[in-house]
Every structure is written in C-alpha cells, then in structure tokens.
Length: 343
Image 1: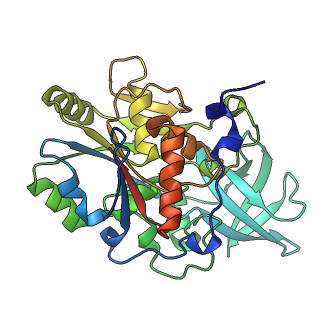
Image 2 (image 1 turned 90 degrees about the horizontal axis):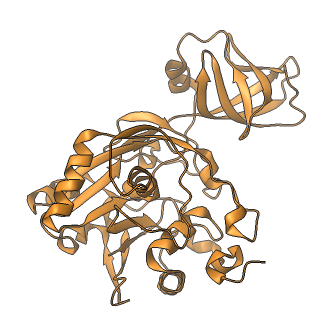
C-alpha cells in the first residue's frame, strides 16, 4: 500500500473544461500564451512565448528535439471484403516489417489490406505495443507514406483541416516520430534569431516520439507503470554545449518532455556522455534532475506520465496550483495549446 500521495496516480487528476482543449494552433506560433513558474519564489506570471528572449539570460542554452513527425497513419481496406482497417505505424522492425497499431473489426493474423492500388500489406502477430505489419511489395516506405500517409494527430484533436506543417516544428529535419514534440511547435525562425542575438545558445537532441506517450496509466501506484522506450541520440556537440553552459553558471533549458528524457537519461550516472540508442527513463517525483535546469513544456493530460515528469521538476502541489491558475485564466491545453516555462 502506497501512502505517499506523490506516488498515487489519483493525485495527478484535474478537471479540465472541454472547451480548453485546443483544436487549432494560434498564429503566429510564438503568440501562444506562456505561464511562467518560478520554482523558488512560487510566483506565477502570464506572458507569451515571444517573451522568451527576455525571460532567459545571455549564455543560457536552449536544447530542442529535432525529430520530424512521419505521415504514419494509413487508411486501408481489407482484401477482398473492403472493410476499413486503420494502421498507425510506430517504428520499423527491419526488412519490410513495421510495428503498428491496427484499428478495425476482427483483423486476423494473415489478413491482407490494400494501402493504395497495387500496394498490399499483411497483418502479422502481436507485439508489446501493437502488431507486426509487412509491406512485401513496397520498394520505398518514405515514398509510400508521402503519397498515402496522413498526419497522426492526437485523438483529442477533432477535424483539424489546417496546414499539416503546423504539427511539425520549424527546425525538425529527421523523420521518425509518431507524435510531435509539441513544446517546440511554438518556435518561429524569428524567435530563434532573437534568442541568438541576445546571446542565448541553441543545441539539439534527437528522440523519435512513440505513440505510447498517449497510452493511459492503469495502476494507482505509479511505480507499477511500465514506461515505453524510444530511440534517441545525443551528439558530441550538444554535450560540449551543455558542459560549457554549466561551467559558465548558465541554465540548460529543455524544450519539451522528450528533450528532458533524453538529457536526463544521458546524465543519469552523474556524467553526461554522448549516446545513441533506446531511452526508457521513467521520471516520477523523487527523480534527481542532473542536467535540466529549466523546462518549456505544454500542458499535459491528467493522470499521465508527462504530468508526473513535470511534477518531479516542480513539486506536485506547485504544479497543480499552476494548472489551476492556467484553467482559471483559460489557457489552451495539450498539443495545439499554450505553454509553461518553469525556471
């Protein structure tokens, strides 16, 4: 029996009016509202993302995730019945196989589905996160996804018909994510240039976001939850930039929870080193942050691993107080919503 409320899932619930779930992004990107939380003073301030250059100090380092979202949602038809089957590709398994979420009625192993005229895929067995799907007749998956794939918007965004590029960051350049690293959606080229002019440095990591980020937590004891793994890379240049910022006494600002997990995973031993491979760091209250000094993040779903990560940085009560203030001030929540800067 867990008695510590910080480790109970029910301690991370909150009531969100449905109308505060953002269905479209604001324009321009950096016009999003920004709730600023000073962890020391516990003071909250209401700003905008375009204020970020004056909220940071020269010499601070901004670290972002440059992963780009794949058009990995495929609407297919069963062969020969024509029944609809939706595929959400999660990650390549090698050869012509992918791991995917498969949606449809009675989709048996061995079922063939038509992706587009002349292109048929075969549904395979189950994996830890979904199903195996084989594409034996596809010479180039990137070309297929470019032709027939759709952007995998989160399930709480309904009927968005705007520019698909608004679900990509302006600096993303390596495809591989099944969902956007959404805190980075607020940056514009102009804002990035303003940060540079002010002497604020910029570095990148690469983490390909998995769809498991949307999976609900099922256990009241948060320690019983099994975290998913995602592929990530931290290169030599970013490690050097972080070390230099720390040596100067400046802050490392992680943009988004994906960047946080990458940096904290790399620094978990106490020494930050470059790496490439799977990240499965599950951050809950009690985590000792070794690399990240400040965080820019969107507002997250109740009872989620992302909310626990933020609470581990701020303290649970401070975070819930900030969320209550954001709801009262009618901030926009989740992927297309507003942001929070935690200092």
